[in-house]
Structure formats: structure tokens, C-alpha cells
Length: 211
Image 1 (tube, rainbow, N blue to C red):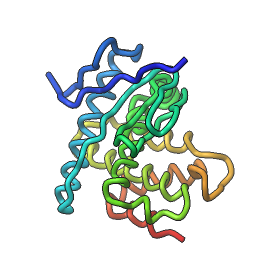
Image 2: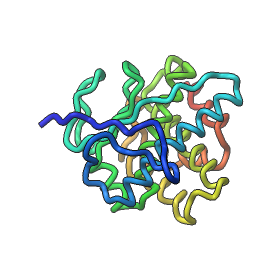
Image 3: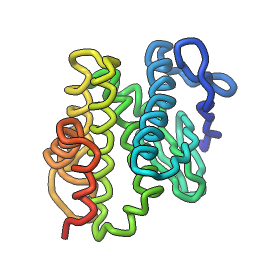
């Protein structure tokens, strides 16, 4: 059954937790608040980063859905997350966030969202046209997720285990065998995330020029 995705509102209230449009999906209240806060915080981070390089930042619209969702880029399936460049929007499956939280921790769920924001970064900087293989696109988005983790950690938003949770999520998202038109192996994806954490934004740009 195709469900209508619900938008995470762009405004923030109280301690920065975005409200949900309509009835929220059955995320735990704690995880829901953290993911909604992260949605606002990740965008603010990239806004600052773009300002630093003299580029405008346009925040993508973020949606959550429970089963499958119809998007301008096709069907977003269960246990999936996508960035759709046709409407500059992110679609994240709620059961995927719940699974990541259960298996690795709350920042694992946030890393999924940060990865999709990484694709929005690529689109706005025109990096995607430099990529010969899909794996470059995906590893760079993992790296950009690590850059956000680095910044959030510096601002003391993270718990001591959060960076490891993001690393674990990146590892679990990888594949057993390498193919250039895949999302990358487990080791590659974890290393890309860690590269962003340790070396920052400019180190991630190297993925655009791999041949």
C-alpha cells in the first residue's frame, strides 16, 4: 500500500524540535524528537558551510513514510531512504530509522538522514555530474554525513558513542562485494564516514575526482 509521506516542518519550536504535519508515525517520542531536531540542525550546518564557500543553500523538504511512498523519482520502498532531485526532497522510511536505532543506536538513524542531505549537497554544488560511477556518489554522501557528525560533536551535541553509531550504520549499509555501480562495500562506506569525521568537508570532495 502506498502511503502519503508526511513532511517534517521547517520551523522549530522549544529546543529546536520540528513538529510533524498531521499525525506522527509510530516512532518513539525520544527518537522522533532527535530525528526532527537533526533535520533542522543538519540543514543549518550546511547553510553555514555553504556560506563559508560563498554559495547559497536551499534546504530540501524532508518527508517520513511508513510503508512505501510515491515520489517524483519513483516509488520509495520500505527500509529505504532517498533524495529526489526532481523536487529537492528527502524521503525516509520510518521502519528503517527504527531498525537503525535498535541495531546501532539513535545516531545511526540520524546518519541515514545526514547521508541523504549529502546527496542534496552534491546536487547544489554540481558534484554529481563529475561522478563516473554510482559508488562515488554514495561514498561521498557517507563522507558528508561524517562531516556533519564532526561538527555536531564539536558543538557537544553528541553522546560519547554517537560517532561509533554512525560508523556502524555506514558499515551495515554496505555490500559484501564491490561493484563500481553499487553503494560500496561495508568497509568502504564506514571508511568514507570516518574520513568526513576526521578530515572534514574538503576531504570529501576527492570522491568527485576518482577515476
